Length: 352
Ligand SMILES: NC(=O)c1ccc[n+]([C@@H]2O[C@H](COP(=O)([O-])OP(=O)(O)OC[C@H]3O[C@@H](n4cnc5c(N)ncnc54)[C@H](OP(=O)(O)O)[C@@H]3O)[C@@H](O)[C@H]2O)c1
Image (cartoon, rainbow, N blue to C red; front, side):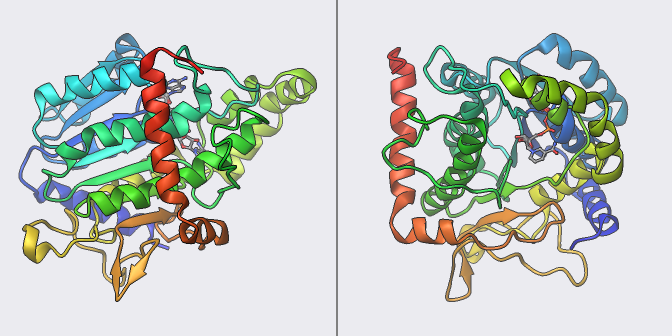
C-alpha cells in the first residue's frame, strides 16, 4: 500500500514543475472528481483544468473556491450531457479549440442506479453510458491531444475487481437488463477496451481505478433511485445505516482525490513505450522511496502494456480469471468494434 503521507508528498512536488499542466475532468463537481480537482489546485503550478458538467451554474461556486486555493490556476467549465455521445463530441471539440495537449484525463461521473434501465435519446442505457460508452468516446476523441503530453494519463474511476461476465451476443444487456449486471459488464469492458487502446497508443498510460468506499452522495443517490419492492428498505437505509456506514467504513473524498492525483502523475504507472525513443517521461513525479513500478495487466519480457487495474491504495487489483480468459479469446477487439458501432448508431439517430 502507498501511504497517504507518501502520496501527499508526491503530489506536493508537482509544485516544482513548470506551470501549465493541463487536465480534463468529468464528474468533478462532487465526490472523488472534486477531491482530485482540489488536490490538483492545491499542488500544481498554474494548472489549467476543464470541468465537464451538466450545469455551468452549479460549477461556478466550486470554481470560485478552487481559485481561492490557487489563484494562478485556470478552471473552465464545459457544459453538456455526458451521457449523450453527441454532447461528448461537441465538448471534446470545445476543449480542442483551447488546447494542443492534455496531460491528465480523469473521468468519474457518479451514477449507480438501482431503478432499472433508462435509455438516453440516443438509445443507450444511461448508467452504461456514464460508466463506459461516453467515457470511451471522450478518451478516443482526446487521445491525439494526450499523445502530445510528455506524460499522458487516462484515469477511469470506476470498478476494477468487480468485473462480471459479458454476453458477446448482448453486450448492452438489452435482453436481460439489471443494473448490477450491466455495471459489472461495464467494468469488464473497460479493462478490455483499455488494452486495445494501449496497443494503438503506447505512449499513454491507461488506469482503471477503484477508489475504495468513499463518503459522498453516490450511495445515497443509488438508494434514492431504488424502486418497487426495494424502495422502502432503501429509503430507511438512507437515513439509518448509510450515515453510520459512511462514518465507520469510508475514506473521505479529499483522500480519494489525493490518491487519484497520484495515479495521474507518479512514475509508478508508466506507459508501454521506451521513452529513450520518444523523449517522453514515465510520469511527472518520481516514485516515493520503496515504491516500485506497478504491474501492468499484460507483461511481456519485463515490459508492461501500460494498462493498470488499481485499487484504492495504489496497489494492483488481484488478477481476474475472467479478463484473462476473455483476453485469450480475443474479446478485446470484439468489445472495441462493438463500442465504435454503438457510437455510430447513437449518432445516426437510430436509437435501436
Ligand atoms: N463513491 C464510492 O464509494 C465509489 C466506490 C466505487 C466506485 N465509485 C465510482 O467512482 C465514480 C465517482 O464516484 P463519486 O462518489 O465521486 O460520484 P458522485 O459524487 O455521486 O458524482 C460525481 C459526478 O458525477 C456527475 N454525474 C452524476 N450523475 C450524472 C448524470 N446523470 N450525467 C452526467 N453526470 C453525472 C456529476 O457531475 P455534474 O453534476 O457536474 O454533471 C457529479 O459531479 C463513479 O463512477 C462510481 O461508480 C465510487
